[in-house]
Image (cartoon, rainbow, N blue to C red; front, side, top):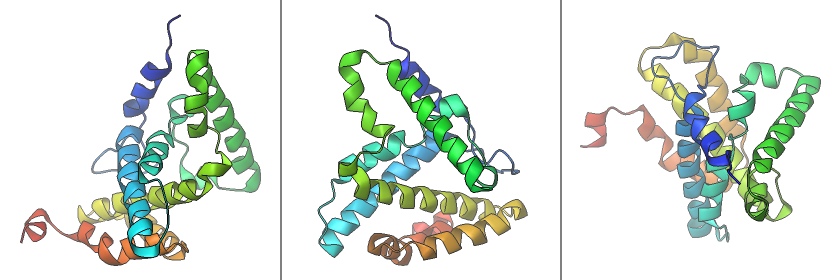
Length: 194
């Protein structure tokens, strides 16, 4: 039997983010998922090395790689629309669940249990999903910083909103990342290499 699962996952590169905003640089969900995976992995390592946690950093990165995969079916719903009210948010969660099940159904039966945790959050991964969600917000902030640095005023309010969201995340790992790594995203290449 032939499976379409990986061909569909490969289409993540075709789904643009920030569709309602004028971008100086386009970002697709594959690029975004890579960014989230790198940051989620870092947050897990920070938790382990600085705060005595016992996170599986590789698992955090893997969950992050798949966190937006359902968008190959649903498209990227802009945040102001997705979270406009509880009714829309709940309906969209149902749509994401259906899309996840549709993707899982594309896999041969013997592989579905291995991929199911990427689409249906399991209790054993709850702490890692918190890191992924935080990494997702940090990645969005980084995109806003990049657009701001390019002089794109379209992202000014989004930058302020994302900074506030990051400050409100009550995770030691996020605070550490903010204090030690986030400011470097405001620097130019020359400033990085000094």
